[in-house]
Image (tube, rainbow, N blue to C red; front, side):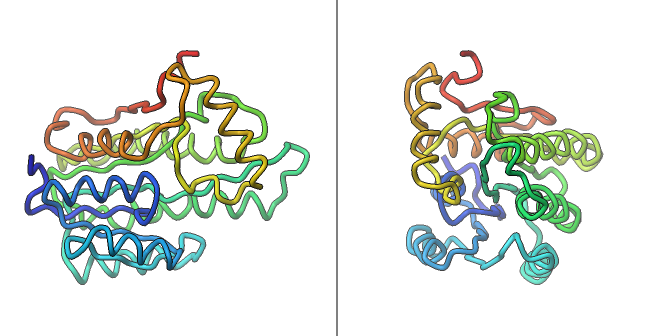
Length: 246
């Protein structure tokens, strides 16, 4: 299938994990992709994997000017047919350890930056295009130690539903991907022992009894970004191996 022939798709956080798997899937289906990231080794690896169909752009979501820089790139290079707001970090810790600095970091990357990106990039999304926002199953799980991350992802899920209403007159669809536990770099900032324990415990609660592969989320993302999902907007798609049914 070449569902994305002659289409340009921008993926934030597309240099590793689910974002990179999605970029690979889209290029295989004909898309030209623009991916962002902040880790040089990841960006170089993504460029090698994706080849000439990809534009790789350094963009640090912690930088308050990152959204303006990204919008300027799209303004200079041309409109896009799809936008996937995927960049995020996961920080964990006990409630009593929450600090202002941690709150600022996680909400800057997971909420402030993608919302501003959406505001600045919306004019460059072609009518009839699509937007995908990555949320998380943690919004519904109520697990201890991840309250800030869960709150940030709940904010994005809620925002996406509002964007679906606002952009409907332009026939731009907005949907949310809700991944469960996946093999990604998302939890890279967690201490190694906490990350290992967290993922092992999550696997036990999944109906399929395993952590998901990035390509399994990428296939759903590709569907939602494609014209095959032309009558789907304002929806949330869980890709969690049955986690939320447990």
